[in-house]
Image (cartoon, rainbow, N blue to C red; front, side, top):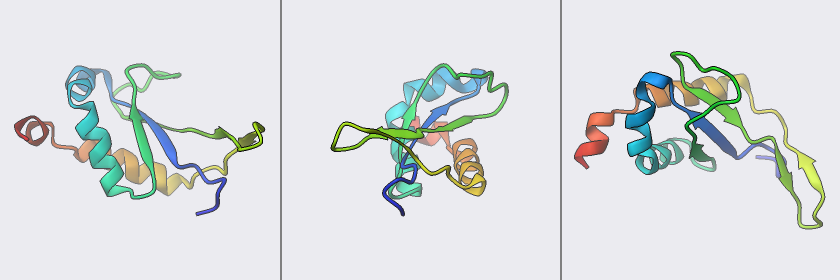
Length: 99
């Protein structure tokens, strides 16, 4: 991974799952981080655009370097966004609440 590659994503659940996912957001983010080592995930309730019935996966595209200069990250590959979206859909809420 290049030092300017995206390493963080914001995930917004679809409206129908938002309350349940929010209740398990730490476990949800942890499960994603274990499935995608080297990446971190923040769970949000609102999206910059309507996500409809799908999970919204938004890469954090900028960061501030050690010299306080802002840098733009390299765009993540579309297959990675698809894999993250599929992992979100496969997350078992019932198992999460049982843990």
